Amino acid sequence: MIGEILPRIIKNIELLIEFERDENLKNKLNSFLDAIINAKNIFVFGVGRSGLVGKAFAMRLMHLGFNVYVVGETICPSFKKGDLLIAISGSGETTLTIEIAKKADNVVAITCNVPNTLAKISNIWIPICISKNEYLPLGTAFEHIAFIFLDIVVALLMERLGISEKEMKERHCNLQ
Image 1 (cartoon, rainbow, N blue to C red):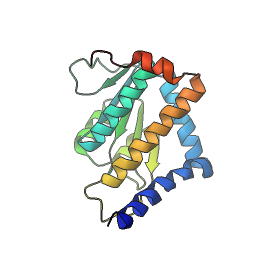
Image 2: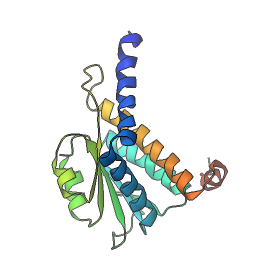
Image 3: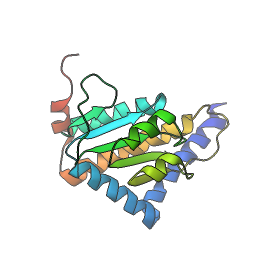
Image 4: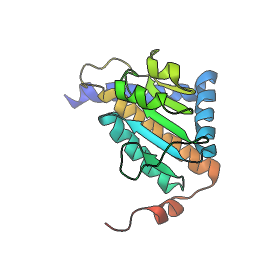
């Protein structure tokens, strides 16, 4: 049973190697890294499980020392020039995500690899390739790959900025 599902999950993870092989995707990834590094404040938004993936990414960005906020939380300030919105939506058609993105002037959209509204209104579109997977319901494959992709982004930022895990741990919540 697991032997039938796990290879499909691994196949999707292996699709991320395209960000190394495909020059267009490599450029998109580098533009995404630059956008994060150059942003005054970073806002992250997604609905449902995409939102949970976004919250995990926002936490890691905070560990890296970025000013980062999750849209919809009570401590979220206003979006201003020089800020960045990272919008996550498997379909790229989630109404609330699109409406939030329309309010920002600097948007990175992370969606599936099919043309969609969120991709069209973003400054940078990160298309996450996934294969059809009938064993994983309701966008699970996208959420897996988006989570892993964003963890790779964190590792690349650590490398680019020379930030150690020790430094990140110093920013980790100590009230637990």
